[in-house]
Length: 438
Image (cartoon, rainbow, N blue to C red):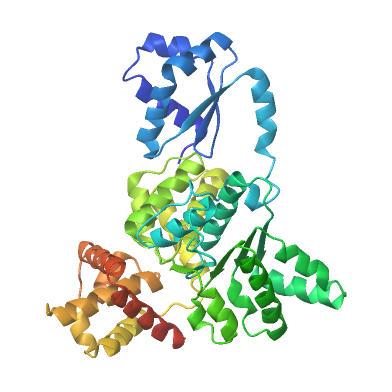
């Protein structure tokens, strides 16, 4: 990974393929790279003539160089001395809320097979393209980008409707606010806040299930907004049908609009997320290191970001340059942190074998029958996803198979999950079986 100054030097090296050394020295000798924010490279040039010349003659070449580095489109802004003075304080200025920041937008959301339905629905809601997606209910495991999507909806909705009243609340906070204001005799204030919203975003709505008074309040809030044609977006860790303590009348309303799930990202999406995050943070990550992280951190986006944060900390705090050793250390740390319960490979193989009705030895053995190969690939996928084992270690659990064979199995399962909903459900069922034995 590199600082913005390092990246600017790489850009200049690429420009030198098209420009002479004299041109580089003449026009860029006074240019200083300040920052990369929201896919924009900010440069400072105190010389007005040089600055205007760079903007008119070389900005497209700079953008092309950044596209080559990051595989993503970038803007370039050259600042004057006055503009730099105004720009510098922004280094420490924070948005008043994540809803107002540019961090969680549709532009920074990486779309893959695992989330494209939820992404498309969120875009449609934010753009006002359809009134059929009310409510929009996005569900999936923690760390897969549900909150990112509802922040992105809010950001886009605000761009389209600057005066709109947008309310974002987590399920637990809705409960706490309800209890506090009702006890204080300020129930009308509570109702006015939520029932006047143009857009209501409720994160982790599963929290309201089983709480009778809260569900009743939420029911009437929902009805008021829905009947007024105001948009409701909710996220949850499960679909409404799996919320056993949820009132039937709420369950029915949650299913009125569109249900969209998000799944763990496949390898290609994980790799794109890593590259995208590096671009957002103004750093470069080598392909082999990015692939290593994508192969080993498989559960969710939050773990990928946490791993990259750890690597950045090694670099910035202890001067540990990005290499395979530091990446491996960050991956190990993340796995220890995120897996309170880690089943053994043997236990996973046993559960997979039991589900498919075949013996453990067949799953681990050399049989190439369709039944054995299918169960083996599922077992390899779940061992990779649910344990801290590396791909070589997984290969040894399955009769000494090599790293390439393990990766092929992972790719096949991820591909089949994308294209076959019943197979995806099978993976979920086996995962639930394993987790239920903890």
